[in-house]
Length: 332
Ligand SMILES: NC(=O)c1ccc[n+]([C@@H]2O[C@H](COP(=O)([O-])OP(=O)(O)OC[C@H]3O[C@@H](n4cnc5c(N)ncnc54)[C@H](O)[C@@H]3O)[C@@H](O)[C@H]2O)c1
Image 1 (cartoon, helix red, strand yellow):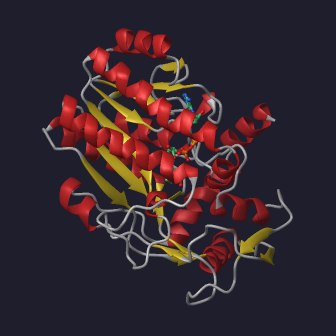
Image 2 (spheres, rainbow, N blue to C red):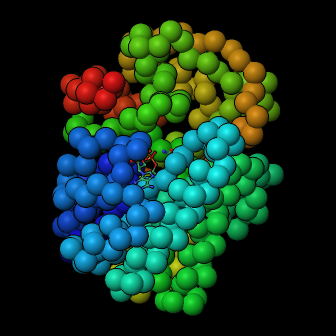
């Protein structure tokens, strides 16, 4: 059974393609390679194209006749979204509208969508349940919430059923070492800590040491990318068995501070990454931790990667893998 995977040449999308293939599906990657890497799309057919290009999308739907779609393609940097909001609304919101229109024309009625905890903004209480107020504080989060709301309307009006998966912090790499986290540019904490540990960058900046957390640094819920990928397959199966449109958090329910990540990276790599203190970044909440019980109830989903040292060891294995080095060398 073919599944169209937009953004399948990206970090999370490539791991979802690997999980789809392991589950017996054929993932068809559709990616414009603006942020992704051709070498990560290795689990099925690859079609280069933009989600905003309606004729090209329809051509790919026609050719592969997918039973469902997983939609990862997006621009996903909070800071960039503040500087270029129109680009974010166009790519993430118009892009999703274009995709949904192509699905309707092609008679495809099942969609798994990459949403984000950024839709919650700065919540008052922890952990964050799906019922918490949704008030994103940047264009990135707003563009994702707008898509979720559109999908609810499309479900009611047109029977297009979807699961919006609100990831917390994706992290780690596939145990094969062949795919892993690679962003252009890399802004995520764990890969940057490993870049500091391996001397690729001088030091890692800790933004904010005066938060109301146990050690003063920001706390996040890190969910391994293979767990995310498994949850996507579970969401697809839920839709295949007539599950109704819903939105679910994907996290572990456990938070780690920036300092705890640095300590773990030191243990895993045997090298203490050099860190420098910097002020808080605007719009960075002190703590984001998921109430992950709904995904467990609805999808029977339980994260398997719960030890932070094990998670960072998987990222470190990818960081040192020749496959990653080759991609980085070809790209630069
Ligand atoms: N990485 C995280 O921690 C995280 C957390 C929450 C949500 N998300 C969401 O998960 C999804 C995947 O994130 P990621 O970290 O893998 O990002 P990524 O940048 O690695 O992957 C996104 C992919 O989409 C492609 N793309 C972007 N715009 C496109 C377009 N118009 N047409 C076709 N392809 C396009 C890019 O080339 C890239 O390959 C995104 O939607 C992101 O918002 C990620």
